[in-house]
Amino acid sequence: MAATQPGAGSASILNSRTRVGRIARWVEFRLPIISMMEHELNEYPTPRNLNYWWNFGSLAGIMLVIMIVTGIVLAMHYTPNSALAFDSVERLMRDVNYGWLIRYIHMNGASMFFLIVYIHMFRGLYYGSYKYPRELLWMLGVVILLLMMATAFMGYVLPWGQMSYWGATVITNLFSAFPVVGEKIVTLLWGGFTVSNPTLNRFFSLHYLLPFVIVGVVFLHLIALHKHGSNNPLGIDHRGPQDSIPFHPYYTVKDVFGLCVFLLFYASFVFYFPNALGDAQNYIPANPLQTPPDIVPEWYFLPFYAILRSITFNVLGIPSKLIGVVLMFSSILILFILPWLDTSRVRSARFRPIYKWVSWLLVIDVICLGYIGSQPPAGSMVTFGQIGAFYYFFHFLILIPLLGKIERPRPLPVSIGAAVLGRSPSLAGAGSAEGR
Image 1 (tube, rainbow, N blue to C red):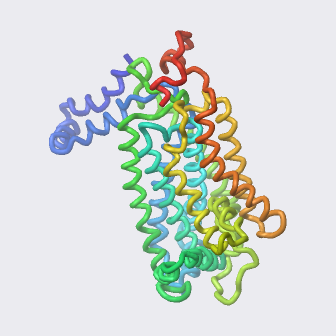
Image 2 (image 1 turned 30 degrees about the vertical axis):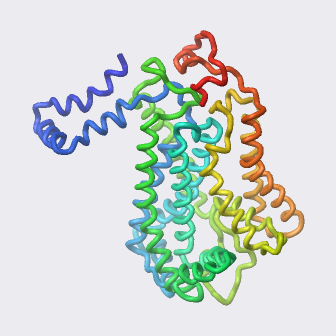
Image 3 (image 1 turned 180 degrees about the vertical axis):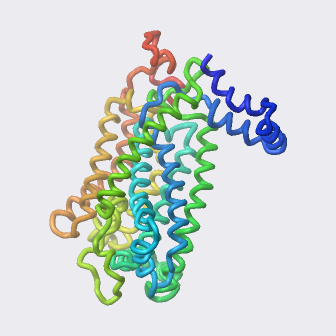
């Protein structure tokens, strides 16, 4: 009965004899947007056992909207000129009404956005959401992550403080490690032979453009999601009405509750610790003649930065810088082939006793790499960084394929409904097609 109720809202609008109903029917006949929204957001059948780990997808979408809206407002007051950029940001903070609030929402929003996306991706790793038939869904998610990284890096350069300037210098210089084309790529990024005004203009243009590209990829991500439906904690496909419920109101309420909790966490940084996740060096105007003592990227780049710096030796005549750059990019690109690296026929870690613990080892490794990336590359930190980088690739290239062959999963429930309602019918074998 509950499944028939959510559709009543839009149906009553279309059937209404009021002026609103007539306008809605006029629009619907020419552009069936109301019925599409009804199907995709209201009647959309969702597994009935989703937990709060599934909130982070909608939170990521909300954060994307917040970042775009605040970014547009900030762009109205920003001057993309190397002589004026720093002062324009200071004017925004001091003279524009609530400019400080808009900037702190945007600045801390970047960290919140990455935190949400990283948790969202870990949920996908833990519950096997990258497996058949959702491989393309996962790959589009990795594309979104790459676009986010590019956008965040370019946005970090815009304040034109010391860390902005030297961060841009160090990171863009990494491309020079590639033979033949490396120097040309760096010159193209810089718009000259040093980080200067053309660089700032290019980064500002791309920083403004890329979020709208992300929106486009997010739409593709949602289309791929709705094609085969959401995965669930059991990792088995839903067979019919007994396994699913309408998205609204059951999960919209859950998402709203998660949003309220998140906003409290987010607001605590905006109002009480606005600079806790930033670097004090960025409140000093950029000075090409004075290098900061430690050049450290934002926290969400630190694990990859640690992998980059872990290679301090040449291999077969290949320079260490090139190897480090290749490994840094490979640590992200390896996620594209993850659906084919995992050879297990069971999705969810709930039924994989070894993989369940191995998944948390990856989290510990990434956190450790993040800490190592924040420290000077000397002494034991280099050794620990090499160990962490080795395990990261060992996890994806060796451990995951091997576990799929040797691990003995527990039996899977015959259906979502049976598991949710606590029934105990006969259990399906772990090798059944449902677990693939």
